[in-house]
Every structure is written in structure tokens, then in C-alpha cells.
Length: 255
Image (cartoon, rainbow, N blue to C red; front, top):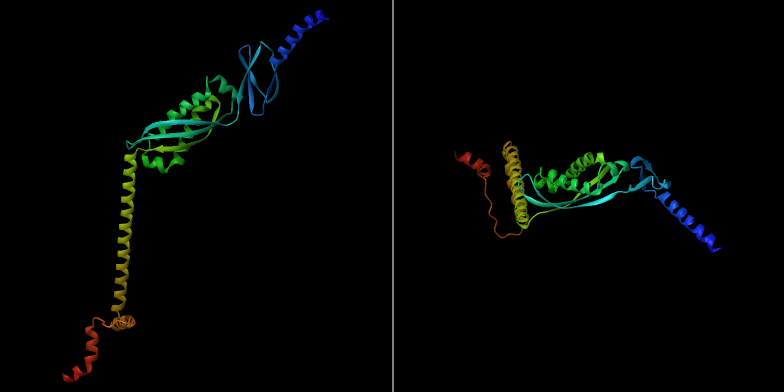
């Protein structure tokens, strides 16, 4: 009995080792890049994969979206302002064979390319554009990265600039600039109001000048509103035309 066990045990171990190296199970989001005697022979998966031991090798790839955090980069804007900018990139593998064969480490290659592209694109814009037009900058960076990583079988889905860090002196300068801009707008609005008021007064004067009696009625209406304020003393300019109107008959008789 022990002799039979000693005979079959090595065979059993060899069979188990053979099956372990030949049978592979890939998850739904995984693919296997298969090489036969060192040559690429196809992409397999997901599910049960059977390989020929010692003849075929398989490299697993993950097709899920990868979130890559780009570290802060020192960027000098087009208007010579030094800022620190970091971003996050979302990408995934669409061609597993290219991601394994065309580049040694697609994750590191994409990260380094993202850093250089971030500095290159942002260096072409002013500081105000970095702060106000992030969506446009994100689209520009995503388009450049997607075009360059296409040869690696990688699809860059999205790029988001997270922070634009500015030193304290520049923050104070921006605050003073914003304050001056608000003051300028307030002065312009006040001047426009004065201009519109002057135009309306001129229009009213032209309307009243068409009939002298309208001006007299305006004076009487103003006097009526002042008298309703219960003031003991009322100083009111007396129009000369009204005096002439009341003195008209007597003056004509005297003449």
C-alpha cells in the first residue's frame, strides 16, 4: 500500500501543478494577453482560460477606469505668474495588447505624460484664464493626452484641474484689482444714472416750455405738497410771470 502511494503521489502532484498552470480564471473586468513561445497570439477572457504550460504565458490587464492623481506642478503662466497646479486624470485600457506590448509601464508613462502636458498647456494661458476657464483647459489637456496615449491602447476619459495655488502677495494683488474693478463699475453706473437723469430733466423742460401755464401749474403743485408738511416757514421762489399775470389788469390801466 505504501509502495503504491509513493508511486502515485508524484504523479498526482504533477497533475495538480499542470492544471494549476494551465487553467486560469479571469474576472469580467479582466483580460489576458497571451504569448506563445514569446509571440503574441491573442487576447482572451473573461471566464475560464486554458493555457499550455511552459509554452504559453499570460499577462493580466484591468479594464476598469484608473484614477491618476497628478502631483503639483510649478507652472509659469503667459503673464509671468508662478503658480502650483495639480490635477486628476481618469483613463482606462481599451486595447490590452497595445498597453502591454507598446509601452513598458503604461501607468507610469501616462502619469509622466500628464505632468508635462499640464505644464505645457497651462503655460500658454494667463492667470485669469486658469482661474476662470478651467473647463476649456480641461478639454484641451484631455484632447492632447488622448491623442498621445492612443498608440498605447489607452483612452483618457476626463481631466480635472483640482487646485491652482497662488502665493499670498499675488492673492492680495488680485484682491486689490477686484476692488478697483468694483469701484470703477460703481462710478460708471453712477455717471450713467446722472446722464439719464439729465436727459429726462431736459425732456421735461422742453415739454414745460411748450406751454408757460404748465410751469405755473407745476409751481402751484409743488407749493401744495410743501404746505402739507406742517412747516411754519415756507420759502418758495415766486415766478415773475405769475406776478405779471396778477398785476396785468392794473398795470394796463395805469399805463
